[in-house]
Amino acid sequence: MANVEISLKEMMTSIEGSLGAALVDYTSGMALGTLGGGKDLDLTVAAAGNTDVIRAKTRTMEHLGLKGEIEDILITLGSQYHLIRPLTGRGGNGLFLYLVLDRERSNLAMARHQLKRIEADLEV
Image 1: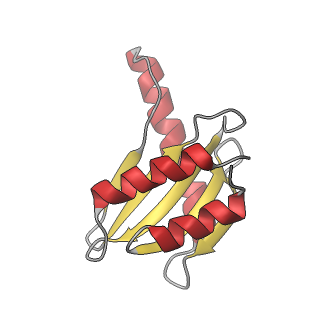
Image 2: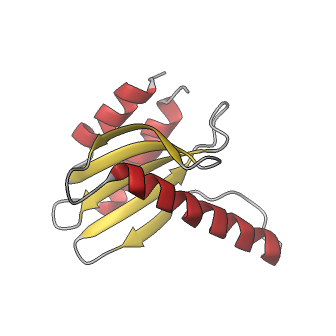
């Protein structure tokens, strides 16, 4: 089992093209931990904004009567991928991992696979 700091470091080092990583509480919109980012990528602002994405999708699923849980959400920009992965393990309720990738340097399928593995090892 890995803690938050170790998991964020692993997201940044083991996933090719990682630009920023965060663990976010989507009940409050607050980032519990961030790594990477920078002047052009404020992970604190992104954490709050992506909280709205999770809430909107959850509401929509409820209105449609869709069962099941969100595995991940992908937002594709011209030069980046943004992956949002709600935690499903015990203690992870209300939290999600957020990963920003450089589109030219990353392999999306491999990044999703690695993020799933990191989530499974994360202990909050």
